[in-house]
Length: 309
Image 1 (cartoon, rainbow, N blue to C red):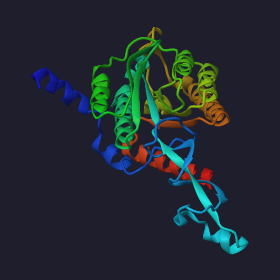
Image 2: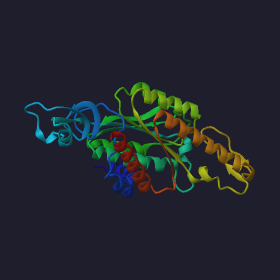
Image 3: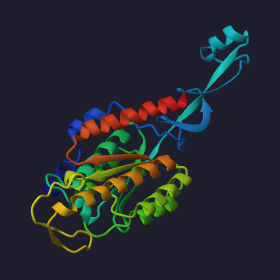
Image 4: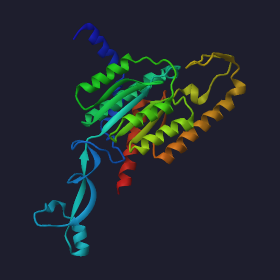
C-alpha cells in the first residue's frame, strides 16, 4: 500500500465510529416488506421453504420432516399439519447521502460528517449480514455511485467515497427521489440521509414513488442543534448556503416564527411518512450515534416482529 493509499484509508476510517458499530452489530436491519434477491441472508422473500419465518400450514404427506409438524394443531384437531416458512433472501440496501452545501453546517460537527458516519455504520452492519449494499451521494444529481455488492471490498470502497466527498452546491431532494425510483428496479431497502432542504410536498411525492415501486424506505432527517433550538440572542450574521444570501439580523424577534416553521415542517414530514409507510427518524447531530442507532434499530426490529405475528 502506498503512503497515499494509507492516508486515504486512515481518513476513511474516521467514519467508522467504534461505539456505533459495537451497538448495532448485534441487531438485524430487517426489511419490513418483502424483498427480492438470492437465497442467502436474513430477510423475507416471496418464496416459501423451510426457514425461520412462519408462513402457513399444509397437511402432512408421507416423507415430510416431522420436525415441522405443528403438534398444537394436531392436539386440537387430531389432524397432522406441517408448518411452512418464509425462505430467507439476500437484501439489497441502497444508501443515499445528501452532499449539498447545507450539510456543511454544524457548530461542533458538520451534519455531513455525522451523516457520513451513520452511513458507514449502516454499510458495515449490512455487510456483516452478507447483504448487498450500495452508496450514492447526491445534490442536484446522483453522484459518486457504487453498485450494490456484498463483497469484502465494498465497505472500503464506500469509506473511500465518503472520505473524498465534498458537500457543495444546491440540492433538489424530491427530484432525486423520483430518479431513484426510476433506476432501482429490484425491490429493496432505501436509506436516505439528509437535512431535507426542499419543499415537504416535493419530498413526500418522491417517497411515495419509491414506495409505489415496492421499496422499504428509511428517512434519517439530520439536523444541527442550532437548527432545532435557534439559540441565537445577539445581532448575528447568518451565512447563506445553497446560493442564498448572507443576512445580518436580530434573531430574537424571529425566533418563535422560525421554531413554528421548523415544527410545521417536521409535522408534515412525520404525517406524510406515516401515510406512505416510510420510517421517519429525526436525528440531531449532538446526539450519541451509537444510542440513536441502537434505539432506532431495536424499535424497528420489534415492530417487524409484531407485524409478523
